[in-house]
Image (cartoon, rainbow, N blue to C red; front, side, top):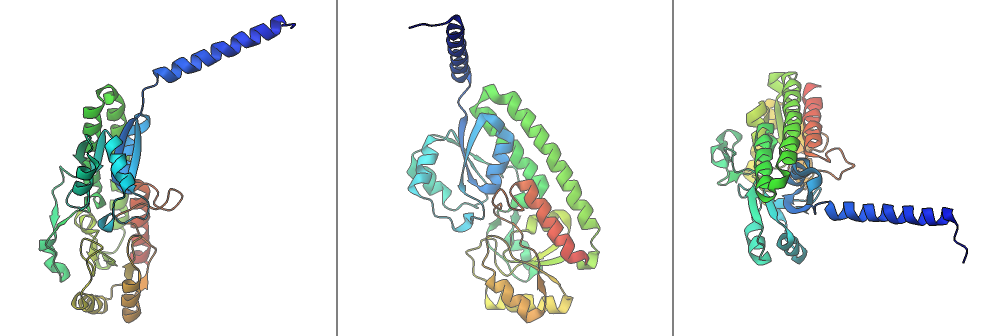
Length: 306
């Protein structure tokens, strides 16, 4: 066999490159396996974790975590994870059972642990009340920043070598959240005060209301599995007519039929679909938390300013 000098050099070069690739692969740390319970939280974890984490989300885009039923595959995902990130505030009523059945040794981090929760018991102004704590704290960007801090600290506790990366990622993300909060406030300030009233499917925007001063009225409670009573619906229809509320919004996790009925009985128009408990698919209008909040405030602003 006639092996030329050029062929030998090519073989040596190929072997060297393969060896370098193998060495680089061996030196690259395995990504930290983490689980987030729902899509909004998963996006936040991915932003803070960056390249050091592999995020699995249990309740995906357009999914309803209120009524989610975990699968055996979910138990396996938890058993393989190093950290499980939950919202807390009783948002995921199924998570404790899932953690127990999975046998996971993963640390569990409640992202909303530093949030001052709103209680539905104080909701008399809206004509109805709920006995449970409102879990939708992410609808106030200030609370989202508390989520980021909890995520950062949880990741550092599990992966001390990544501290610098997690802290840098969190700092950069917090700056984006500051800009988001300022933009929301600017758009709300441009809406005439007497028009800052909105009807939504279920009571998922009370933190938004408290933070930004837009009144949110909903026939359903803080969970989508709560049926709206005939009395609540009748009161809301009367309120829409009395106060000439023009904006009705259906969320991506809600059945639109009730809102369509309210619209037909009041003459109010249904605005663009908004997102409360779940992101859209990545190519949709609310593929990230920041995109979701921007989409919602733009939809609210367009309906209320016209």
